[in-house]
Length: 251
Image (cartoon, rainbow, N blue to C red; front, side):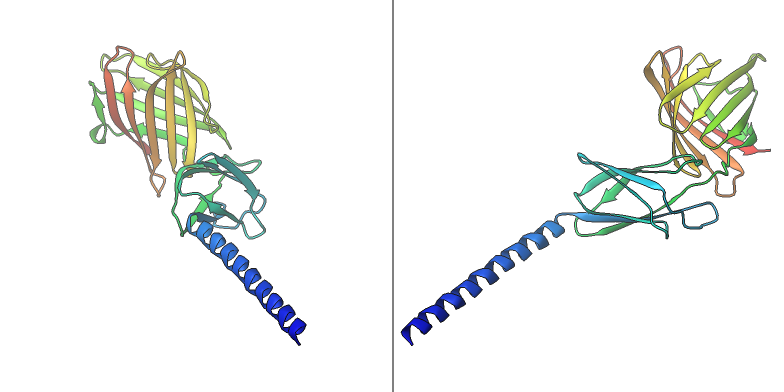
């Protein structure tokens, strides 16, 4: 009987110790979960249909992860440290979409929908609405027409304008949505431009001259596809601060 009591006590002690370990492990796991957040998302086309097999990459805070969307166009990244992340989605035949800042918050799920589209709303001809545009320093051009041609992730943009003195100018942009600088010809202010497509209607543009950043633009296409607004801040060829808002209307 004594031996039985000793063995029973020892067995009960082992159970208590094992339970304590499980409790600690569970507590640590719960604590870890409370220190991170999750990103859930979907990728659709311009019609709203789910897109499978899209490569989605999340990067930031010292980490970079990638996965393919499932048959329902869904993706998820779990256990991300809190902070700001960059998200991009890529699939052969479509312009890559970049989302430059997605906030991950401790203990929360962040939801994101990305749209991949071959229907670039820029394609066509746009004319500058002088009454809605501002130029500092001035004066404004007499007129300006912007034409986009191409398909997919590679476009050519041509600006033909008449300056205040009546002189005709022409600037040609190689517009490739890869975030890398590509040649711009005909401008005295810059010689290369880099384009990031945030989504189907929003873009970020960096202008450089001889490798030095001289201008940053944001470009917004209205939801109805009729208005193209470019807001720019930088330094012109004369070394002056340059800030302007150009409002183009689809023809």
